[in-house]
Image (cartoon, rainbow, N blue to C red; front, side):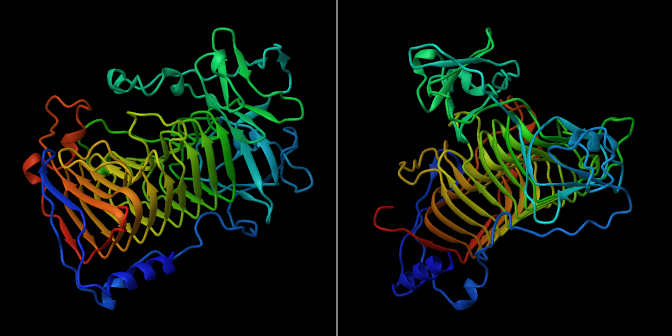
Length: 508
């Protein structure tokens, strides 16, 4: 990546100037085209993405130094075992029910077909040494009936029918997004994700159909000699704020390292907490669970989001989140959070429209959330990282953002929405966006109805930057109170855009 950036810079500084598209507007109907002359010095190129390594890195884990009890768990562990000895592991369900503050769960490698694991204590969960535990939210489907017409069926009791949220506009999007896309079931053949279709006649080798009334799943591939997996759980772990297993919440977030979570209906992980519905002081939310840490984890193939994450002082580092639907990481109403050296990729795999997808959504009055040195790539049907609704003092630095949306769409000077944006900052106050690289994005940056965003020392390659405001307010808004959390219409100003390198090739 550094070599690509250096090549672009070398090409550009041999010319006197070039033009780029930078759209700045006071509303969504009035835009200007502004040619800019840039002069370069080496000092302007100090901040940039590190080049990795990004995502999970294989680790050798020593036993954690905890003040509590260490429980050993394996996929074949017996619930009746205490789990206190490595040679006598217990089950994950049993260990979760026992743990208290400062305890640890040590996982042997292998596949855990388990879910709905609920706890409320500040614990550590990690692998044993360099072993690789994988949590799957699917069961194996091995009883199929051949209908003799290219279809095979099986009965399935663990189904997850669902509907779109009430704010989804069917009158706009129903022609593009059928309602069955909002169901939360998933089917896999030899690990390959199949798309849902609306009736038996549409089923082929890449799709499936579910008759929810009959509880029957249809596929178009002979299941003989194939591994067929169907979702059976709608979560892996839930860190609840309520009472569970005879214990009250200790308010401490978990530390989770080195684990893969995959194939879950709805979401893999949820950290519960307060979701304010209206303007809220940061002192009044994000305090239910504090200090959660996720490192070197992989979360993939969740039918809605990888996880709903809440709580101050959270760290998500060296994780990979991929192949999700509406969002990957969904961070809500939390402060002083760090997302660093992660890979966020392939969100909105069902291509749902009108649901405003994002690989990372930072939502509802989050303060000082820092996204630093992440790899945000391959998102043709999704936004990248989106700060939305009442966020304050965001930091977006040194990220490599590539392939967000499409650069082949015509840019409208009348209305830049709908669009997909690498860094999207909406209805929020104050952000630093510096040292990032945006490559082949619909919009590299879009700042909308916000104030005090500083954009400097970024590189845009075949990617636009857009700063805009309109008259949207809380009065009669489709989302009710959302606009009231950000700057008022007359306060959407004071942005800075300096020292940015912008380059477009012949096809841009």
